[in-house]
Image 1: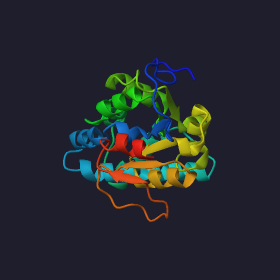
Image 2: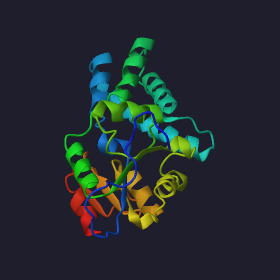
Image 3: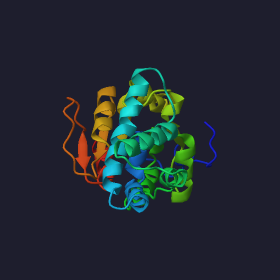
Image 4: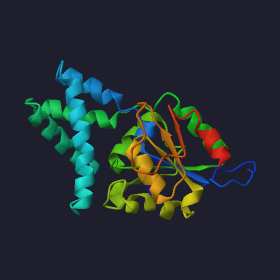
Length: 242
């Protein structure tokens, strides 16, 4: 799959590595990119209302992804995010000028990697693991953040739900990783940021590591992650133990 970022291709060359069950890792976008600047931007545009706006915006953002998947009316994540912002502002009686909308939306193109991400990703690549994004983000959103974060040599692909026309947790979205890597599900670990995504990936059949940075309880969906931790530092050990 061609991209504009010159993403790394295939397996790392070099010393041989011992056989392992996990051969590839797929990451949700927010497992790598820190979304907190969105809150800071919202507070700058709407002083004193930023937290309320982000809560309403994020809730509607993912509700729209699920509703559009269920109703067969898919639109990409950039459009869904913009529509959710318009709704959240209307619900909170906030006037949203075009300049404010553009400033808030642009934040999604300038998300820094979490502080522990780069070291862990380099370690996984050095161990011969194949890495890819599996994200609701559009290709443009992923490419912008990959390039800004200096991650283009670490990931061999950025898989976006646009390719499946179905958002996570629809099985068709997770199937993108199986098709790309050419591996069975049990050989592809999935790293989630949201509890519902962890549950969806687990039900699909992936070994799942939940980077639960918000310290949230697991979802009551009868599909707990195989490992939950406060960040990515424990991911290499989780993969080695599988």
